[in-house]
Image (tube, rainbow, N blue to C red; front, side, top):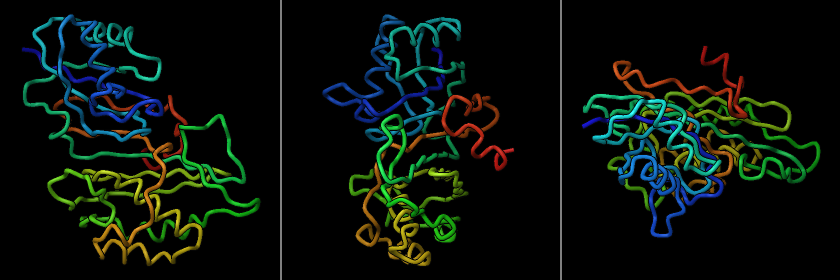
Length: 273
């Protein structure tokens, strides 16, 4: 039996999230349909992180098991031939049976792209979050950075957890929250051991509220300590959220994500050098 790890990019705007659903309009359904057409047999997949409706991925990782013998490049080219344009495998790697796409991941990273302006920008619809502010007004990114500092470290993130979250524990370790402002854009990077359901979108709602001056920066620490979802701001839109990378032990040699094919190219380069 062969265990194959696969790297996946997708634009999630048209799909009802990752996880398979009865209506079958999910990334997993489309991927497993394409794999079946390539392999001639249905092969279930295990994913690193289940993304929500409208959320994208630059560095999603899955694994599957198969008795088939195929060249690794054939997995990529063959499966991609049956996928819609908004989903594409990027690489394939044979791994030993100890590899698990979900349970062996020790770090996950998300990006959020937020456009701030007085009107909608159709060309970024579905691919970036949007905040309408009157001409001349900006988010206070410095206040957002100050607020985000309280998130670093190991915490109970219950205040940012969706009611339907299935995680066994709300305690996660946040390694980094970085914000970069560039004209009308604000780019955010979140790195953590793992994330709860809707956690990044709920954090975004709170950070944007601070950036708009609705709350002082220290309010976020109070929300975090309160461990009550009702204390936090509403969940922010999924459009600008990207699963950017998943880290595994070096022994498995999982390929690094190439950010050059996304709108985040170069945004965080100095920090990641």
